[in-house]
Each structure stands twice: as C-alpha cells, then as structure tokens.
Length: 360
Ligand code: ASP
Image (cartoon, rainbow, N blue to C red; front, side):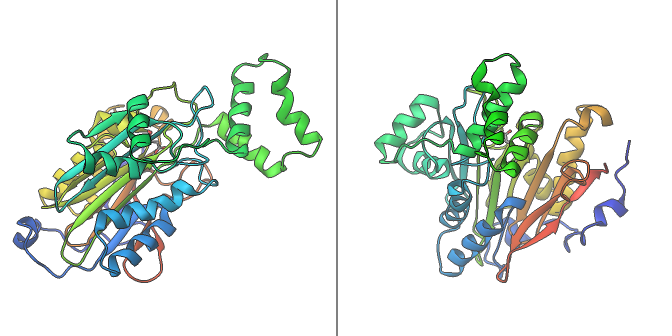
C-alpha cells in the first residue's frame, strides 16, 4: 500500500505557509487583517466566485456561501446536488444540507428533504426560525412549505434516465419498460453521450456534494454543505452532509472544514470536527485534512483493496484565510480527474490540487 510521504503532500502545491499554532489574536477572535477567501469542492468554481463577490460587497459570510451553492443546487447538470441530483432507489430525489454561521455560533440542517431544490436555504431557515438544529423527512418538508418554499419535481429527464438504467441493471427482468433506454437510443431519443453517462453512473454510483467555506476580512467564517447524497440509496438514508461535525463544522475561534465523498466514512471519524480540532492544535489546513483521511484509511487497516471502493475529500479554511484540502486518492478513479478543490481569493476562481494519501 502506498505510504504517506512528505513528498506526496507537497505534490500539487506548497504546504500552507503556517506551521505554528494559530496566532493569539485569531484564537481569541481578535481583529486581524485577513485576506477574504472562499473555497469549495471542485464542482464549486462558480460558487466561490459568487461568494467572494458578495463578501466584497459587504454581505454576511453565510449569505455569501449559500448564494454560491444555490447556483450548483439549481444546476440540472450537477447530478450530485439539488435539482437534477441522482435519486434514491425509488427514483425520488432526497436532499441533505447543513449550514454554520461562525460569528453567532449557530447552525441549522435538513435531511431526506424532498421536492425543495435549495435545501441549504431551508437549513438556514431552521437555524433562524427555530431553536432546533436538524429537521428530517416529512417534518422538514412541512417546515419548508410553511416558510414559503416552492415544491417541485427535482428529477430531470437525465437523472430519470440514469435511475432507469440503474434499475435495469439491478433487476435484469424488471419488465419491458426497462429495455427503454436501449430501444430509445436506437430510436434516437437519447443523446448517446447522455446514455453513456447514465450507464456509467448506474454501474458506479458517483459521489458528489458541494461544501463551501468562506472568511471575510474580519475573520468571520461560515460554511455550508449540500447534497443529493449517495445515488440509489435506501429512502431515508442520511449521509454526513447534514450532520454538524461530519460534513461541516465551523468554530469561529479556529476555522471551518467540510467533506464530500462517502458520507458513512466521514461520519465514523466525525470528519469536519476532527479537521477543525487538528487546526486548533496548530496543524495547517492541508495537514489537518490529511490526518482525517488517514483516520478513514486506518478504519480499514489501510487495506488498499477495500479503500479502492471509497472516495472521500476534506476541505479546510482557518481564521487567517489559509486553506487546504486532502483526498484519499490522487484521482477520482483510474484515469479520472485529479483531486482538486476550488478557490477564490479575489481574482478568478481556480482549481488547486488536494494533498492525497494513496496513488491509483
Ligand atoms: N457525502 C455525501 C453523502 O454521503 C455524498 C457525496 O459527497 O458524494 O451523502
């Protein structure tokens, strides 16, 4: 099995400049000149741009990151989040999200929410309008309705096709309707590229999700994580994204962290909380993320074969605006994309490589 080496951490960029404990001013919430920055999972180039635009305009950091991820939630082409997200095994899209507002140390979350395409906004409403933290399923939907959120079908033609293709694969004799994707291809109904994508996600359920974290010039931090969760999940399955301390954690004295990928593995190590606690003890964001990845691997005694089934990433941003990310694997699959995360610190959004534990 591949060993973590200093050289590997250095691959894809420099270690964060900081090596010592957080400065006293930052630890105590004192004023310091921070360069505002927003970071997110790799699917969030537009999200970090939007978040930074709002922060520069004086918006609250939580409003900024939520507005950023709303772009991805609304995008039918991102199959891991919001509208167009891949559904559960019944073909119903169920969304999970959490938010944390650093300055007021509040949080809100929803899980297994159906029919509302911006679960991050509902999570914020839970934070603002209740003294609860997490609403799930039917209760979350009723709350969202009460708050005036509009219900809509979140399945797109593309995600329905992927679900049907998965069904056809799983239940070979499910019925004549299941021949539909192939028959329809012959009839020229589906774009061959879309059909190839549907076959790929049916065979290898992809991981997705967006986590976005931001800090402003005063060192105020907030974060959000939003997802449609694991494709083809059992209805009611809840991942790490809506669980505070797992898919998201923000402590305004230290920084914030988030996770994407196999939620069950993140929950088992309380991923985002673990990362923030590492930073509290002085670890640079990148190192803190790598330590969380090591814990995931240790749960499988570093067994490479077993770890091949898992994809997981951690992202971290400290109160001084230093950031980093780490991934279990160097790429998203054999021949896949390099593990990266999105950053905007005032200029153009860019992708930065993550540290990683294992090479494919
Ligand atoms: N972390 C999400 C979950 O397990 C899914 C993902 O990021 O792919 O629900």
